[in-house]
Amino acid sequence: MRRWIAAGMALAALLAGCGTASPGARQITPTPATPDRSIASVDSLVTNAPDGTPTPLPTPDQYTVRVWWPDEIYPTDTDPSQTILTRQFDDFTQTYSRYTLQVRRKRANGLGGILPTLRTAQPVAPGTMPDLTLMRRADMVTAATEGLIVPIGNWLPPDILESLLPGVEQIGEIDGTLYGLPYMMTLYHMAYRESVFAAPPTTFETILTQEPKYLFPGNVAGQGTGANWTVLLQYLAAGGQLVDAGGLPTLDRDPLLAVYSYYEQGVEAEIFSPGLLTFSQSDDYWDQFETGAVSLVFANSTTYLRRRASVPNTAPASIPTLGGTPITTPDSWMWVLTTSDPDRQNQARAFLSWMMRVSQQSAFSESYGYLPTTQRAMQLWDDQSYATFAQSLMANMVLVPDTQRNSSAAAALQAGFAAVLDGTPAETAADEALQVLSD
Image 1 (cartoon, rainbow, N blue to C red):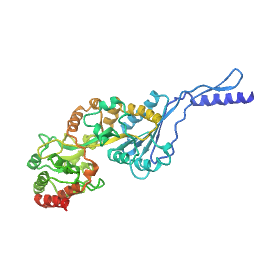
Image 2: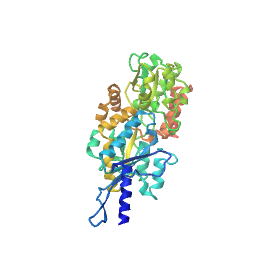
Image 3: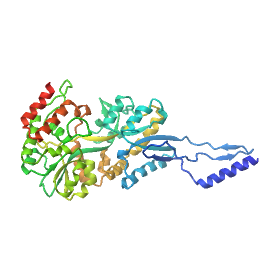
Image 4: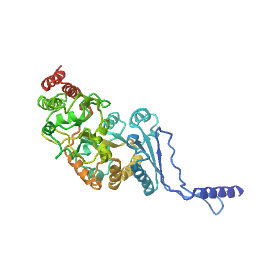
């Protein structure tokens, strides 16, 4: 009897110290990753039966959802969007009281990164793997090829797919099979000063006529051995292709010559120079845009949304092309499913549905400077001017597989562009690029 009295007193003290615990819990593990420590909750109480025997009360089942979140898209402590994101995590565990949410922050790649860890740990420690993770499209393709993720076409709630913006679903497809759900996107376009241009400068002719100070990333350092996005998209908009009917690398002479001639004339007018090859991202020269040293720059949508406030009278536009045809390409973070266990899949579906709710996606994406992937989330943005522009640009979105962007054709396109900047005539550069592929 003394034992039972002592146990009861100890339990009473524990409950008094803990207060009322919520059965749902959320934990975020920072990088570098440390062992998961789920937040414990009091799931049951001990009562005494009439004969004095302690009897545990029945408790509801408790479920755990394991999520890996890339550091690259996790807001800093001083970013207001972090408050929005963590509130969404907390609200999930409060709404789904039987769920414990474990969020681990990890790098997308490199030592301890998401893709490398899936490769090494999945065969030996499957219990430590996430149920869901976010990864870039290029990593999704690799993960699917290596069997590290599972198709989600029959797993996703139909209403989520139906809510996506036009053309967005195909970003998650590989050879017609859906492996990823696009969550947040970046598009490539231009930013210009409205005080300098009466209208968006979207054609080669406008650029050559007005001769603006104009910068874009002419290099592809850290992105492979292919072509920079500006030249590649301009070539595609002119009707060029990177593969032939048989899937072999190819370049089309007329579109190639049209693009090279534009840059040849631009070099003569001192609009362009080999200095473009020193830039590999828009952040490399945005300060020149801020100071007014240049009036037109290539930018991704995230850089534009986060930094446009520093440039008075700035507006977005599609990149200049031969006939003014708008064109862009997306860079998207995808939700992918890493578990084949039906129970864990069900639990992961609940969390994914929560994060894809219109209000959730709209609030976090606009605060953080990314584009949402659902129609209704875009409509809820406060900045409807940019949302309308982005949606019009999405209607002219092309997907360029990494195998094509980093192909010998893309490399030849880039080499010819660099040669033109250095003074090689457009005709000669085009012939040399075509000769490379024919050798």
